[in-house]
Length: 112
Length: 115
Image (cartoon, rainbow over all chains, first blue to last red; front, side, top):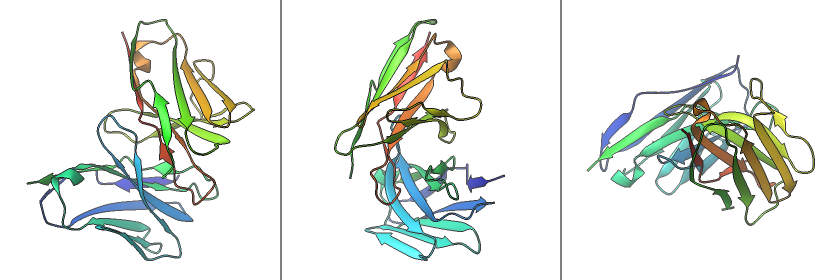
């Protein structure tokens, strides 16, 4: 069955460092992959979308890579700030379905 | 980006009563909206796909008579939790996508507590 894995343990880093979050998937052939940010008690907010034919995409301090051979996406936040603390979700399109399927997310905590 | 508004953000109701949650797309028309449920530290679980002008499509294991969905216009979908019980307490979130690129825009979420 299709599976999306994100590290369930919180990632703790120091302000100014680069945070790297991982999303692994199995039994998918996604046309694209998305990353969302979710704050406690709020709905997710879209950050970036990367397509299967793209290796890397950047937006300000964010960078996403997509390796379809490894079936993995890495999400980087450079020069992290305490305000970046949140849960980050990856989502894949359903392999032919336009409805994205979400991972359970990884909590990022940036310490001042 | 596109805006999806969900209301109310928080509701407490008595067991056995019904609660209606509204989801509106404010600056685009959405023929399809999605309803999710999320438990603490868990992933978003798709409950149903709401289709404008037709019946909703429910995911396996979701009771259609318990969770009534109405998508009466291109900008409004409602989820009604009927005869709510404490186990229905959860965080409910709607989403919709403008017809470009597949990114989803989410409402603010509704924290439902059934006492």
